[in-house]
Amino acid sequence: MSLCVLMQVCLCVTTVMIRLDDGPHPLLAWPSSPLEVRVALDAPLDPAALLPLTTRRISLNLPVPPGLPARDVSLVIAAARLEDNGRTLILATDPHAWNTRFTLPAPFVGMNYTLDGVEAAWEPNAPDPNAATLPIWWPALDLNSVRQRTEKSAAHKAFLTSLDRPGLLTLRTFLALPPGRAIIHLEADGPVRFDPSTLDGLDGTLENDGRRLTFNAEIAQIPPELFLIVRTGVEPNDAPPTLSATVETLGRPARPLQPSELQLPWSPPPPPVATAPSPLPDRLAGGDPQRGETIFFAEESKCSTCHRVGDRGGKVGPAVADFRSHDIAWIAREIAEPSATIHPDFVPYTVSLDDGRVLAGIIQSDGPDHLNVIDTAAQITRIPRAEIDDIRPSATSIMPVGLTGVIGDQQLKDLLAYLAATP
Image 1 (cartoon, rainbow, N blue to C red):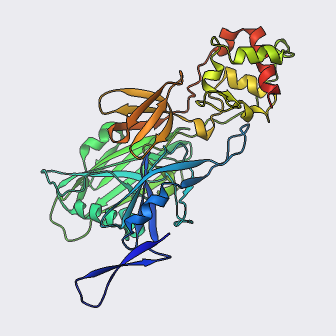
Image 2: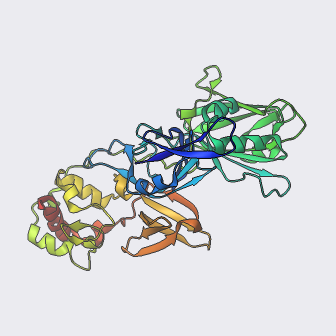
């Protein structure tokens, strides 16, 4: 694949696009939304290099939950475009269903990113068509760390220059700290101050004319959200704005809050911890696989609406072949407790649209500009990416709960025998 870099020859104003086999090089990759990844480049990328990217996938370093078959999981790259004069590559993707390490495909092999970090957004006090108000990823709450890690990103450089001007900066992140009580200390300096309204959702105090914010957080299994409002450009100041964050936990001295302890506000919740299923009750043993096959494809049970055997059935849920490495007790638990284990390929989402509609189901890319939402009835709704207001993963399967009671013991026994015997 031919790429390009921008080179200036001596003092000439003419720029020459030269194709090189090994350039330009990626400097930084970050997730800009649940459906988008951005890559900062050291030189402008040739637009001709975009097309091959849409045939490749972003790989995941994802341990499959216990009890699920091992398989490769990846994100589809549905579209690619350029900004910042070709130095920022934007990839439209499948939703990011898990917080893990993601690896970009060729020609950017070795460039990784995670869903750790902070979502930052800035709005000027007065209307300004040139202001960069779209949310952007920060790797930390500490502004010095943000500058160091994003110094070669044109998008971040433009955003950070806004903080000298009057406006409001909002910072959102989840605190992925050890369970228990934590005390967070935030310090601001330069032309930035914490806004008093930040305390509306925090148990804490604001001191030193808005320069110091201290609050308590109760950390549980699901990380709590931190929402900060910072006033920028509050006074003329030649020094750059600074923010720093420290944390006290379990009576230990304050220490810097680490980037790995921050998760993006749209980062998916941790998957449920799978436990060993209970032994199969005697009343559900010894079913007839042939009768079970009839039940599986019957309209009443609707099993084949979402699951398939070979070429028959739907694709909303895992194929029956995925069950073949499990015993019958595991299969029975999956029917009775469908949220006990959810495979990465079938994480459900709730999607809110600009027109007020809310959809729920499995998400699949459909070209560069659309997504398909497949609901529990296997109905497909095609939606434009541009009209998505919010998209959130769910830890609850879209498979209905209570199917065992609807089917009844005798039919469930036969269905289990079929599922366990199907090659």
